[in-house]
Length: 285
Image: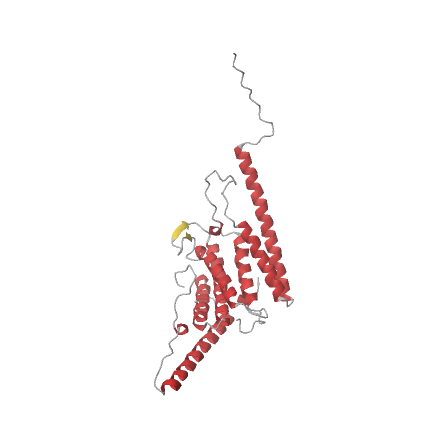
């Protein structure tokens, strides 16, 4: 018996090479990324307009939708294609100071602000959003021209980042600490409110030590200190009434100032008049 000849089917003339497929997929990813960025921008602007028109609930919904679209962009997939049998390096989008990441952080901070303006304020959720923003800023805000990674973050990931990235992240960090302080104040956690407002001032000074701090931050810091002192005085008076005099220091977790929980920072702290939006640091952007 003669062996049957092997028939080789020629590839169609329009078959793409691996490099062409890779380039095509990258182009598709870029278009999808741009589409998501455009959608997030529109939703954020819709939230800003709703807030200016006096509809904080609608604004919160729009900001929340914008954040959900950002989450789609930051899902972790293999870097070059979706073939799960190929062991590709996983993309780390949070270590690139991209326009979409800036949109995500600023939208989180806007939503954090709006949650304190709702008929029933949500200080815990507002604080969580501010902490998420601070954690996303941390790799870029440690020192100029360097991006760090890790739980602290401690490891150097990149050493030639433009200094403009550091300046931009420190400004956002100042706003994020202000949002966190406002949430702590709304929850009557005055000691952590003090820490947050002080960290906001430090972040502003890190960019320009001669820069005048926002008056609203100084005002909120002073109000937090007054409320903190008033609470401690009330507790001391209560102890005096119970024990019949003597000098007693109020003993409470609120009296102790420590690191803020849940932040990946080395130095880790309601809007009192929620309708006051004339200060830059508390306005939406």
